[in-house]
Image (cartoon, rainbow, N blue to C red; front, side, top):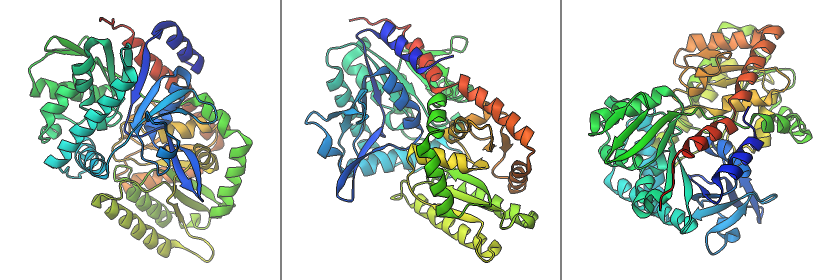
Length: 492
């Protein structure tokens, strides 16, 4: 089984003097002003959850956008600082963006064009030329930062996600084969019939094929990507080898289901700090005496939050005996609120909650509690341990690490995971109660099944889920990718 020590040994013995560089939009640590003081907070999101423990084990440099309001106060003149602050293990290199760059590159092309293009939730992408121009500009800025960190050294550059499609090409144009470049695509890859509407599809493909290795969560997404290549460009596809060759350059295409630090999360969930936070959550939201259904997501239209609210409503309609005995607690922070679709979603969630609470509330009890705030890792684990049921109702999700975090936290082998079949995680976590989140009747029945499940079956399901995540942990994911990269030879 892959462990933190396995990764450390692999890097020490095989990488030698090669520098490991990770590049992503989101940074692993953010510095903010709170009550007049600078605080360091762990970044949010699946990329951070997955890669921070890997970088702590491997060392190297992480290049990302500096977006905290106190980031510049603690960053050196070269844009770097050592992280995490309490026990530095690697270097964070911050890329500074202007408001115009952030608006067009991040909110515009990345999240109004590529994000809806890749998620089948019936939200129309917006392709604006000025957004694309800034997207290219920021990708070049990342290339500048990576090359400044690499210098004349040999390096593995590990690019993350859809914000940096063009970065592989810009790096290879500058450094050629001195860099081995891999790209992990954290969100779904669409079918060709969907992808072909993108006006910049050829440039995106050319950018990605500069990689030596591209990873997706599932074989299905690999197949979608290869279908796009087959239909859009002239290239040699080798489906047996899972590779594509274009212009004499071969790119390997592989499925690597991402995961979490199973052992580390379990230890933290059992800590006294998390126990105290569990008590605080119960007191803050009045959870004592009630079964708790928990959801933890940033507010995003792919996460199926209105759908889960309607399922809770239907659950109480069909089972009025559950009134005053169950609470649905939805946690998560607002995101991308500059985009109108996200503002509309937030308004929709507010309206749904008000309507459902008015409909079902009794004196001193309401079924739905909502807190829009960023949770620290310890707070998230405390929420998982408070929950009797964890509800993941994503409408389309590359993986969904909330499901795996929940399983990892349940060292008590209690709790039930209710999981959308439209997540990559559902392909592994088959002992969850699986749902179609578009089916309100089925989802409400699944919630009732989870709430009334016999203790022996609860324990059996959770034990099997934990065994799956324990073996397929984040260090196995990283180890397989790094091992694949080690097959490449550096040539000057």
